[in-house]
Length: 247
Image: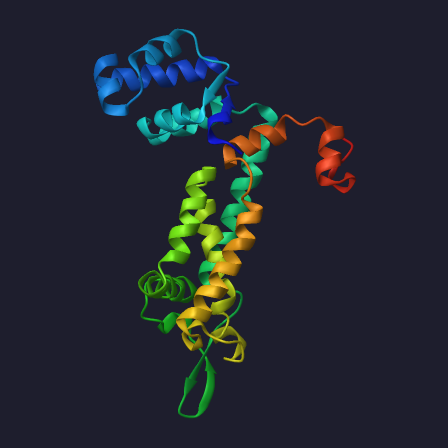
């Protein structure tokens, strides 16, 4: 999708105007707000009283970056109708469910001792980080040092398609996730530390290629708006009749 074509619909225009007024007030006027945020004074003046029906992606990002945490939350609310808000909540829950699995692991890891393999006692682990998260950070640090092109190329793809938040981090985590299974499998599954740098790069690049297929879509918020605007018939065609329920 061409980034120049990306636009966000504004559902709650009153709330959007209040956000713009808050930004202008906090920076001490439209001129100061323009200098601080990069948003043209003409747009600030117009949006305070006459919010747009649609907001270009560049403008959305500028308003988002200029806002406080509260204003950013209100901005998302202003851009989403009731259906989109429900989808946003479901997506947020899905993201939160993934984080523990990717960081803390699928089961209790094993370790080796003089007497043989033994379960790790998580209460005695000196690391402040979950073991899987700590290991993933080591892997990515190694990859960035030895084969930096893998992540550089993928981050270029993410920027092109507007995936700059938690979903981009999850994509990288999922791509390398199987390489962290060694301690949970009793060290039967291969560890990333056993691979040559070339094999490690090939594996991660293949995983990221899979993620590119899934992320070849609009950014999260725009995708939510698009899905929320589908008719039931169009929804059925895209996602299947199994996911249509009668109320």
